[in-house]
Each structure stands twice: as C-alpha cells, then as structure tokens.
Image (tube, rainbow, N blue to C red; front, top):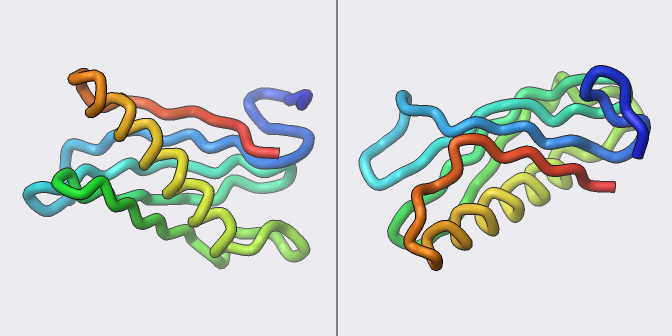
Length: 104
C-alpha cells in the first residue's frame, strides 16, 4: 500500500477514535472515517461492553460509485473494533482511544 496524506492507493484505511459522548450506558462508541483512494466515508461503530458485540454504520451516500459496498465496510469495521476491544479486555487494559487499520 502506498499512500498520500493518509489516503491509501488501494483498499481502505479505517481511522476511528473512541467517543466520550452520545452513547448509552454499557456501550462504547468509535467514530471516524474509512479512507478510500477517492473518498472519505464517515463511520460509527457501537460496542456493547458486556458481550463485545459490535455494530457499524457508514454514510452510504459518501461511498463512491463503483467503490466497496457499504455493508462490506461495516462488516470490516465492526470486526476490527471487536478484535481491538476484545484484546484490550482480555489483557485487562483500557480500551484503545484510537484504532487505525488498513484493509486491502
């Protein structure tokens, strides 16, 4: 992957930060962007702390024509946040403040 100013030349770069507001008790929310080669797509991932279940939503209107399907972006984002939060929980560490991952 090569990139210019944080934008991948292929695939998607997920850049998410934990939000301290706008969520229900027992829930953690990550908000950010899916950086695609030709667009930035807003994304939100909600994690239920008790079960670790993660659900993502993207702004489907921001996904460029011919780009990845919004449901594929959601599935990948939910899986990577679930993995990052589960790992922190398993090692008795705080949940990550920021999650940045590239998917090809």
